[in-house]
Amino acid sequence: MQINKELMPMFSYTIIPVIIFFLLWIGIILLLLWIKKKKKTVETKTNPKKLYTTKEKYLRMISYLEKEIDENKINNRKAFQKLSKIIRLFVYEMTSIKLQNYSLDEIKTLNIEELSQLVEEYYDPEFAKYSKGDLKKSIEKTKKVIELWK
Image (cartoon, rainbow, N blue to C red):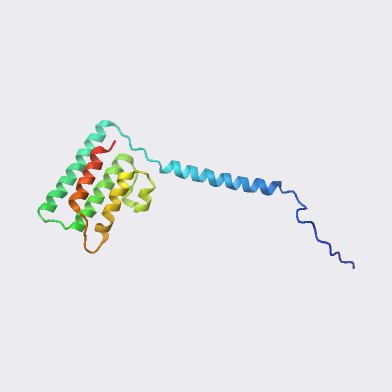
């Protein structure tokens, strides 16, 4: 029996299918990234009547929270938690995005700068054992975001 020791040339097959395969994978990855980015874009516009009534509703909620704080019925930590809940519910009502279930990083991907800044400001006082955040300043910022929402 005769044994052949010759090796086959390195590229004895055509390279075109390999190139096509890689181009398809790159195309699929780019398409998925584009779709993901498109999904994350948030439409923040709404009709004026709903906008006004929703703003009033959440500004009243904040006023009630301020009243609780002034009467010492609630501590700072709980106040920050309520404030976070209020702004998240407001944005949910305006955009239909369930922010109640979103982490800070997920909120940042929505590209609503004011919202991500507010939630980031709430995080430390909301989850720390002893809250050290400036509650009055945070309430004013939250009111401003709600009032300026378009």
